[in-house]
Amino acid sequence: PALLDATPSTPSHRPHTSRTPRRRRPPVAAFRRIKVRHVHRQHKMMTMRKQLHRALARCAVASPLSAPSPALDAARTVSIAHVLPSTQRRRAYADISQLKRTPLYDAHVAAGGKMVDFAGYALPIQYKDSIMDATKHCRTEASLFDVSHMLGSSIRGKDAVKFLEQLVVADVKGLKAGTGTLSVVTNERGGIIDDTVITKVTDEDIYVVLNAGCAEKDQAHINKHLAIAKSKGMDVDFVVHSDRSLLAFQGPKTMDVLQRLTDFDLSKLYFGMFTEMKVNGGSVWVTRTGYTGEDGFEISVPNADAVKLANALTAQPEVRLAALGPRDSLRLEAGLCLYGNDLNEDITPPEAGLTWTIGKARREKFDFIGGEIIRKQIEEGVPQRRVGLTFTGKGAPARQHSKILDTNGKEIGEVTSGGFSPVLQANIAMGYVNKAFAKAGTELVVETRGKTTPAVVTKMPFVKTTYYKPE
Image (cartoon, rainbow, N blue to C red; front, top):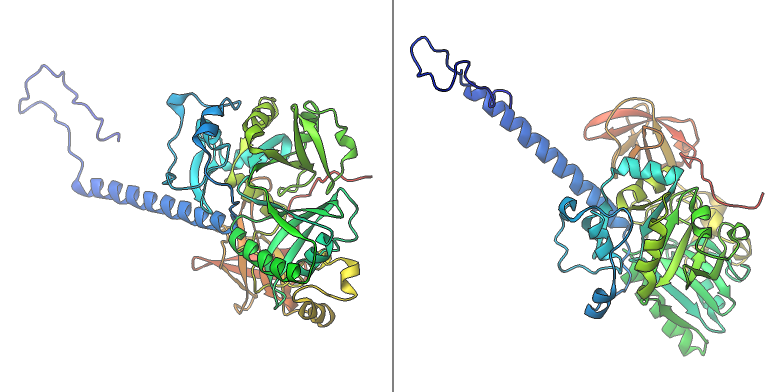
């Protein structure tokens, strides 16, 4: 650029003579070098962006929310706090015209969200702040995520508990009303069809939130077994909450902020607990849980009230909207699994380090789908284990499918999730290794793009969790 902007050393009105110094034209090779560097830089950025989008899309689980009606569109406001002026709004870089939209879609666009295709939904991957800044903000303040694409559902009826315990490993019967737990849906091989948060509202009403990318197969699996149950005279129904949105409100200051909008004493609602309450004048379902490792709440709200509630929350000075990018960084720092990366139908709960999700009462009979295979693995051990990895040398962040080697160069596993931790300012990863190498402190090597970086097996979470629990 300096070469191109150079000006003659003589006044512009003087005619050129043999004595007048002229601008030296840069050699053609210089232009070529500049162009090549520019093209390489653009190609590298586009490649990294595509890799991030593919990784995020694998975890997305679409909800059955239909596209909003014109009447709802007209009724919605987009006055979410911290919205950029229209002249500064950044154009979405995904073809979103044919994608499903959550009730907060207009608010995302107005706030400068970079919209991407996420399991068939138009959702923001980032707002005006960087993914690094957004991650740090959630660790210190409060962040609001739109997760309305998730499959919110309920199993209802007199036989709801009995039916659900056929499909998941949790001790649903043993849960107290108003409490919940993380669980997994298993197949005949003991593999994980999906991971889920299950909350017992009452003995006849179980609230189940499933992942977006698995929505189609999850519904098919549940409906298949529902038909069998009904044929046997069981009183049970499966309800999908397409009329509700889901907001994840996460961070250490969320309780203080949310308390301003409700008369319910949030200090009595501990991690994993559920209740229905009035927030901002409307009735909502609130579960004290999240996917970041921080204290927080997941709020199920009627679609018609979603934007109003989001406006009320983001109007508070501590709160920012947060998108898919920081959500992925936060869950990795917290050592939480991403379905499609760290979990799939060929990985069992013992291999994934999720044996704790199998309730004590369920271990007496293992009377859920794939139970006998899982019982055998618990008794005899598994060939591989999920582990955390931190890196003792410099190198590019490990990505999914990066090879994990022992110190002699023999391949002994594979990375399933990896990236740079904004909080730790270091590369971290998780993956599966042969059981003999799963002990914390074991030195290993990770190969990424043909280059190797020394690593060490590390206990997770990488960043300490701050769930709100009784002392």
